[in-house]
Image (tube, rainbow, N blue to C red; front, top):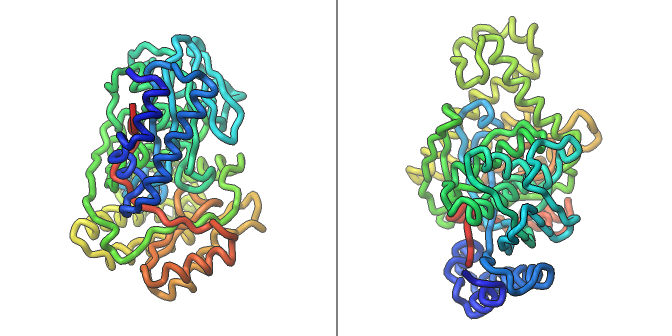
Length: 434
């Protein structure tokens, strides 16, 4: 069991370089490894300054952002998705504190303190980090584990409201800290993902599916079948994206993805899809045969409304596409994969209707970015809305030969630093060093 001084010495001495390289220097860059080592050392130093260098059991934890690769809003209807963890993460130094308090200092945010003696949902905490911590703790306690407090200092490269799911990264981070200190690492990544979803649904107040948490917690590129959400089928898709000839770009449109009204936008998608399922006496669309849905369109339009019908159409089509995308990657058919990504993006715009919010129709940054991005790609690669939508980011697979021009063009539109070149990392949430 090491203290902060020992952990810091090991980090600076390169003892954890192999792990750090696998998380952050996926292109083999010595410069990126140096940066990862310095970042890890700095957060340990911040922790030592705040909580003491002698804190026993100090360790580094990582909760990565995730990118949705296929299946836009299919998870909450128990469909298929394709997702992956990325080399942007939340990194924390944490140590047990021997109390019943969880104290977390996240750079750029107010410090939070949660008592483990009251883990009931707090209405005033909805849409806050405190709700996520309390929710994760509550679910782990419900699973039968004895909880104890810890201190943590965290830093993040997962842009808030980026569509890389900073909330899932945070849930995964906190889940791994509790798992290490209170569960003897007895929870597997799928269990940690489910705990995160519980925290987000019950305490945070967002009716999300499980894809975000799975992408962050499990890691790598994975295909997931949520037909039985209690026991999802998770299959790793072994494809070397570095050999595809394309770079993965996440473009921040500058629109406020964290606005409170967007929680209602996301929840409305779930409610409307579920209203279609309810017409057939089912809870989710996965349990409704598509042929029955198609045969009932007139009645569904009258009962549920046209937007609900269109969103259901999107579900059936994108559910199929997610499976087809995974298969295309398995067989190395990247051109087929790109065509499916473009088709998914079109469906999200026309059927799912999650590229802008009706609460503020003047703000349509995603459609503008998609339009300019398509012009820059000029028929090559692929581009689509990324994640929950309505605001935030778009995703593009950009041919290497067009990457400089694409990045320059998007940042001329949106501002410097708005186009991020990412990598699919092989590791999900983890203990990065101890």
